[in-house]
Length: 163
Image 1 (cartoon, rainbow, N blue to C red):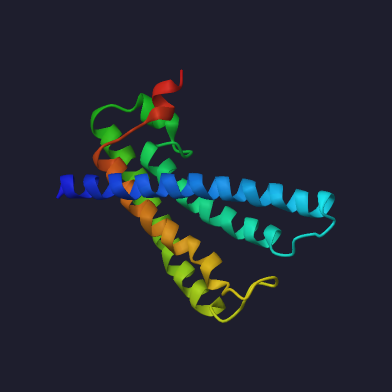
Image 2 (tube, rainbow, N blue to C red; image 1 turned 45 degrees about the vertical axis):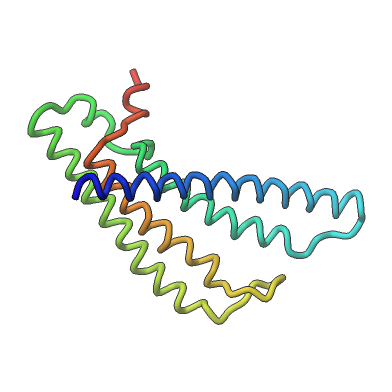
């Protein structure tokens, strides 16, 4: 079971990392296009700013998956650095359960939010608002896999670099 979760996590985290990087590149290209269209062509683009905002939400949620997996989010660093034995196990379980509870709330309310806004469209595009809001439950669900994998096989890059 452990190996299956870690294999799933490698795939999920890798896909989230790649997608977040591609979204960053897309957002950058849209930002450049917006400046060129407005100041060079004198024809402001009506859809780029709104697209960039929505893609940024997706990028952040997918980046959060990678951050959870690598132990790079704010946590109780002092307690993790000083804890030994049973106390370390207790601290790690507390962090894992708290993170999973938080992400479960995001999934639950995120699905409800997507359901409520699915018939609304963006102001500048004929695209459902549900696509933008779907980043919350999708990102949180993927992050849950990363949290469990981090618990099974911790990668504490931030703690190892800290002094």
